[in-house]
Image (cartoon, rainbow, N blue to C red; front, side, top):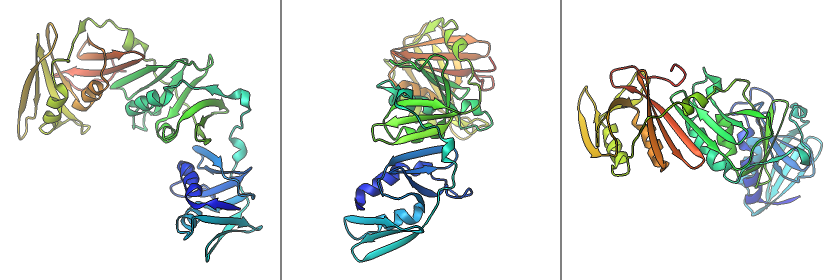
Amino acid sequence: MQFDRKEATRKLQQIKPGLAKREIVEQTGSYLFKHERASSYNDEIYMSAPFPVGFEGAVSAEKFSKALEGAPTATVDITADDERVFIRSGEMVVEIKKAEIILPLENIPQHEPGDWVSLAPKFREKAKLATTVASKNLGRPALCGIHMRGDIIEATDNYRIVQCRTDVSLPEGLDLLIPKNSMSHLLKFDPIALAFANGWVSFQTKQDVVFSCRVLDAAFPDTEPAFTRIYESSINFASCNLTGILDRAIWFADDDFLGNPMVIISVIDNLLIVEAGQKQAKFRETCKVAFHGRLKFRANPLYLKEALAMNFDRACLSKQGTSIYMKFEKKSVTYLVVFSNADTNVPTISNQ
């Protein structure tokens, strides 16, 4: 079977996230050829793409890819017998051992056309936003995923929450918690539909790649109380280049016990003051904002910069004990971050 070398390489690169980085389980580092598709499976992610080679079997992904990449001609000829795959290009001939597929691909749900649910047009954009907020703390698995329910895509790391609404709702009762790492791989494509069965969620993409991953077996926290509390004060940063100030302040900021930079932000009516550093150097800069009242809190400047970069229409505040909730809103997206009073420890959303 003749293949364009670059196109064949591109298709196999698409399913590379399904390969295990270290092949502890046999064939998790192999391309699996079956039903005119190439697939990869590492027990967490399964991926497949069209690849009509005309044979079935498992082949070392590394050796197969190297043969394609090193081929001296623009086209390659790929054939197989019962035990070997042959890749021919010009005078080059590569033989690679072929094995019967032993991985339990039958555990991956296969879906009928009627099983698929269309995704919202801006699914990728909003899921990507949620991925930036999901936690990396594997000790809290419920926070390490992107939560999908109804028309909501959301994530939290216990310091921030982002909640996005979409134009298309999932079927009633379908509640998915997709691992952050899996979602990051998925978003390299353009997902257009999903289906769910037996603990696996599968996505169809515009590139004709099928991406399947396990969902997390954990309960995502209820975020509604944080969003629906009374936000009594509004603040407008439009007249202040706060992003530029925070960029400068980060250079002088001392780290907290988690290694995050921290600055002190004070607001006295319309005057905002950013201060950073204590140990070796101190920083202070002011600007004008639209606010009425007095406020002083410790903040991770990266979180605040993240919110400002989203160009929200409205920002408001709520004081709760020693914490200050700052909520940023625009059409279909709400971002919330919790800060602490300047003299208290860093709070989390769940302990308030």
